[in-house]
Image (spheres, one colour):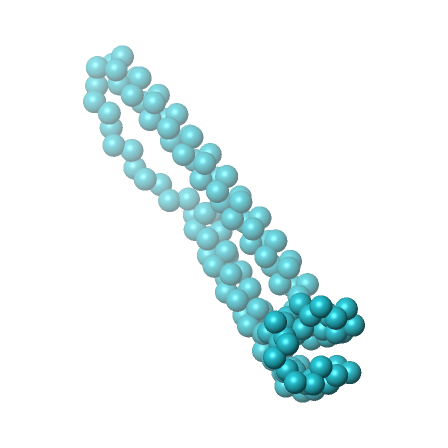
Length: 141
């Protein structure tokens, strides 16, 4: 994989893809140094915040799915009750008005805001990693 470089003793690298390539090397010393440098370069202060935000987003999405399922079951039960009562009364079914739950609208807006913040943090993390790579010249001996 990374056998295309001429001097296996020293090599400068500025790209994460090269670090990943170096982590696949058969030489354990080079592999160990590449893993260490990869972890050092890719660690940013945004990591913890991104992780917390992703967890919060997944919890909100899970709650929304559960509320949609509950609402669907409730509407099925209501329509079934109306149908049964209409059959007994001999009347036609009435059209039910669609009600928009304002809490779901608020939750969806909140979710969109969190997704935007997550994208911003990930972009900031990528920019910081690129800045670290530009500043740092690392040599493996």
